Length: 224
Image 1 (cartoon, rainbow, N blue to C red):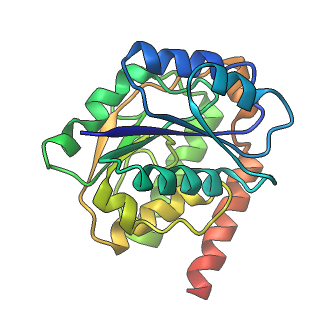
Image 2 (image 1 turned 30 degrees about the vertical axis):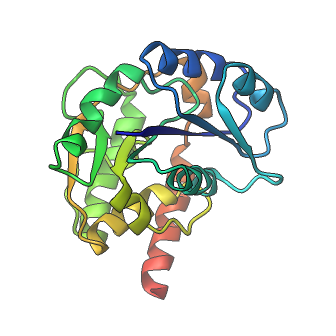
């Protein structure tokens, strides 16, 4: 099956080489880096590493970058599309177990979870925010998960074509979950490891941003 890795990236020159190298060492070739108008050498380094680089001419947000990458992958006849963070938190070695249920026809989309086992050393503040998010998503969309904002996910062609990402920024993660429920896609959670480094923690979402995302979700739910 033709697999594409979509990596939304913004100012990731310090780690993007290592992220792409890790994927290549695990024999993943169709690596798509969507540079969301970085001010550093992210694009140049990604190109040198052999990735396909798609550039946004203005900074639009992670949701828009993921949509750009998915749309490109579909045009290239992708069978499976994997979204993968650019900050070094995700491990290429987790992809095979993530896509296994899709390859076997058991799921349309698989979502990585850092809480199905204890291999991820999740900081306490992050754990509290994410655990609260589980109940919010369950109440709003009726979808039961153990981890609701994990950027490591895989989807088959059917799911990629059905999921509509309209939110340009970080609220896209919740939007994808809503789409799974709305479009009646078969989903499955797979245990993955999230690596928390000083760099990734600095790049990650703050509690304040998490609250803003929640408020945007509530407004969207009311408007819809």
